[in-house]
Structures are given as C-alpha cells and as structure tokens.
Amino acid sequence: MNFFSGKQLLDLCKEHELEIWQVMLNRELEASGRTEKEIFADIEHSLEVMFHSIDQGLATYDRSLGGLLTGQSKKLYEELGEEKFYLPDRTLKVVAYAMAVMECNARMGVIVAAPTAGSSGILPAVLKDAKETMNLDTQKLIEAFLTAGAVGLIVMQNASVSGAQGGCQAEIGTSTAMSAAALVHLKGGNARQCLDAASFAYKNIMGLVCDPIAGLVELPCAKRNGLGVLNAMLCADLALLDVRSVVPFDEVVDAMNNVGNTMPVAMRETALGGLAATPTAKGIEHELFSNTELNKGR
Amino acid sequence: MSNNSLFDVIGPIMVGPSSSHTAGAAKLGRLARQLVHGDIVEVRFTLYDSFARTYRGHGTGKALLGGVMGYDLDSEELKHAETIATFRGLKFSFEEGHKDGIHPNSVDIHLTEDNGKKTSLSGSSIGGGNVVITSINGIETRLQTNLPAIVTHHRDRVGILAEITKFLAEKKLNIAGMNLYRSAVGKDAYMVVEIDQAFDDAISQELRDLIDDIMDVFVIENR
Image 1: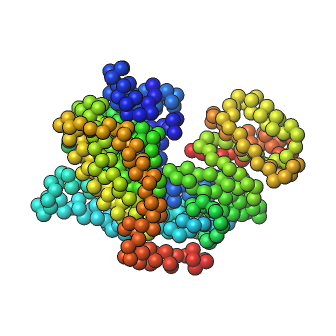
Image 2: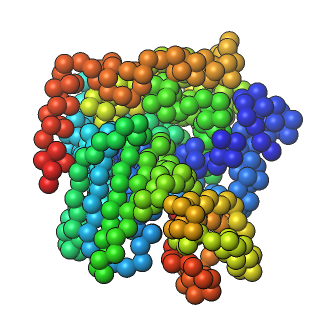
Image 3: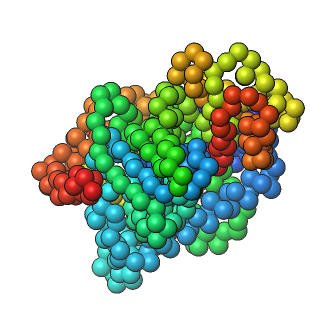
C-alpha cells in the first residue's frame, strides 16, 4: 500500500474503508519490514521527546545560543489567567508550547524535527493540547502522528520542505498542514476533511519567505511556530465545519512548490533578504559573528 | 523520496537548533571518529562558508566536537562538548578556511591519535541532517550513506574486491551499495561497502588478517 499524492491517499482510504492513519501504517509496515509493535514504540518515543522538549522550553529563561530568544514562552505561559490578552488562555497556552519547543531547540535541547528543526514546535504543541483538553489516550495520539506523517510524506514527495529551497511557507506551511490534518482526525473528521485542513494551512501563508535574523533558527522562527498553531487550529475548525478546499490538496502543494521555486534566493534562508536584511538585523549579525573565537584564530 | 519512512518525515530526534548546521555536523564528527582505531588526542576543524560564519549560533563547533567524541545527534552531551573535551584532555581548535566552489556547509576534520597517526575527513552537511563525505585522508570520495558500512583501506590490485566480496558473502552479509576510490593505479585505495544487516565489529580484524594488501578496516555504524 503506497501513495504519492493526496488523491491516491484518499482513493486508498475509500477503496479499503480505512482512515489516513491506517493507510500510513500499512505503508510503513510494508516499506520498513518492521512490526506494528515496533513502529508504535518508536512513535511513542518520538511523542515523549516532543512533550519533553515543551517542558524543557518552559523550564527556564535561559538565553538561546544566538541570544535572541530569552524565555518568551515561559513568560507567556506564566502570565496566562491574568485576563490581559485578546486570545483565550487555552489558545495562548498552545502558542506557548510551540514557542517553548523552539527555545529548547535554540538552546541545543533535544527536539523532533517535524518536518524540520525550525518548524518543530507546532505538531508537539497541538498534540499536547489535544491530549490535555480532550483526555486522549496514547492510541489516539499515535493515530494523529501517523495522519500528520502521511500529509508530510506527500509533500516531501512532491515539493521541498526546506526553507533554503522553498521559503518559510515550505517549513512552517508543512508543519501546519500536518498538524491541521492531525487535529481534524482527533475530532472525528474524515480523510477528505483532513486534507482540506492541510490545504487551508498552505493557502493562509503562501509565499512566506525564510528570512531569519543572522541566519539563526531563532527569530522570527519562534513566533512563526506560534502563528502556525493558530493557523492549524483555524484550518482544522473550518474543515470540521465541512468547508471544502476549492483547490484540491495536490494542486495547493504544487502551487506552494512553484512559489518556492520562483522565490528569490535572498528570501530563502540566506540571511540576505526580508527581515534578515534590515539594518537592525545586520547589526545583530555583525555583533554576533565579528567576535567569534574562530576569527580570533584561537 | 519514494522510500521515505514515517520517521524521515517526523524526525530525526536531534539536538537543535539546525538539522544542517547541528545534526549534520555531529554526524560528520562521528563519521571521522569511526575512521580511527586508537584514542584521539587532538582534533583540528577547518570550517568553510556558512559553517564558519554561523558556527557559534548553531552550535556547529560543539556538534562537530561531540561527534568526534562519539556522541549521537540526539545526545544532550553535544551542548557541553567543549567542557567534556577539555576534561578528557582532548585538544581541539577551529579555524576558518576558504575554497572556491565548496558547499556552504563544509568542514575538514583532522584527527591525531595518541600514537601520532593522523586521519582526515572532509564532508558537507547537505540538509535535513544528511551528509556527504568528500574526502578521506586526501582521497576524493562522493559518499552519502545511511546504512552500516565497512570501509577498507587497501592497496589497489587485481582481484582484491573479489576477495572482499567473497568474504562478505561467506558471512551472509548482503551488500546494499559499493563505492571505490583510489589515489592512483596500484596505490592507496578506499572501498566503502554498505551492508543491509547488522554485523559484528570483529569482522574488521578478520578481514585485515585474511586478505593481503588490506592496511586497515573500519566499521561505520551509522545509527
């Protein structure tokens, strides 16, 4: 059982009366030659590392390696309940989770790339929240993990998920699409609705460039993971309402890929364009790198 | 990309912040270490382009050094690699190099063992934690592998490959891929044999003892 497009995935679901996660599991069983027990154990381990990375991020105000992240997720998490924000606490809590993973990442903590390190906050954040608020068991989380994986797999087979090749839309876009599909499944949505939610995720941020300050996986990456959480939840809700994606998932992925391919190199993780090219960012870059041990020739 | 596993999509599990600048760097360090049998007393890194420019912000130096000490790309110790190296008495240094047309995330790793033997490996981190080895001890390679592998350092001569593959067949090890690199006819050569099955490290000694003109055999775990 294998699939290379959203259409093929939906056809398999229909033909065999399976959900996305079951098709993905069958594919993995065949491709890896491993047992269901082994695969589930690895998924559980990945989930544990994901949730641990959230805890790590929320634990301290320690600065990141590049010094641009200074415990913003912990601050947000601790100030919930003070009725000072526009968004509801529950939503902001998930944003804090996503940003916490990015802080853990930027402090050289252990994370699970999902699908990349720079976009590793969104999936753990929405899964942890779903687990807490919907009181889900491990089986459900494994299903969500497989659903997200199926979406990411299709994208990786048809487009790039690296910021250096496709811009931020390819990284944050893909993690958001994967997360949105997982959320739809957790609320009982069907396979088509999962892919509709994934389509919405890309449409909402199509064209977003990859322009991190000083080339570091810190800013604006952390906030964009926070935005990804909101985008994923919105897209999942719209799909659960049975709003349909007029443009099918496969065409949306192609569009995203074409936008990425035509994006100027300066906007693709080179720190030459966008925010990275601003005088302030250049100043930070100069300060960070002009005085390294390396250049001192130690 | 058709054989991608679920865990290539959601994974690897790694120390941040960057799959290319951190995870790939750790992998390159580990690969270099696996080309050495004795204790490493000194390591010198020459970093190029993006690796050199952003190495501190991405922990590239820590990851490279941690890898050389044998730590995995998801090992918390990477973060403290410099402290651990100092504690162990492992001398290390980083310098910036320049080469035209080199991949932006490239490094030369020069290792010295306690007996004075020197080993070098050059490689590039090409994205998503994947790496390519571009030279071993000065001999150009183009090696990208995710499987366990046996690396032989031998003298180029008629029939030596047949002897090595026959040995592996007798051990019931299936060859997934083979790459051969040599400096010149009849001179130093390296062969990298990727293996599907897990195997015992002891076979490297066996190979060395059995077949003439094999100078050294290394085992790459590639976890």
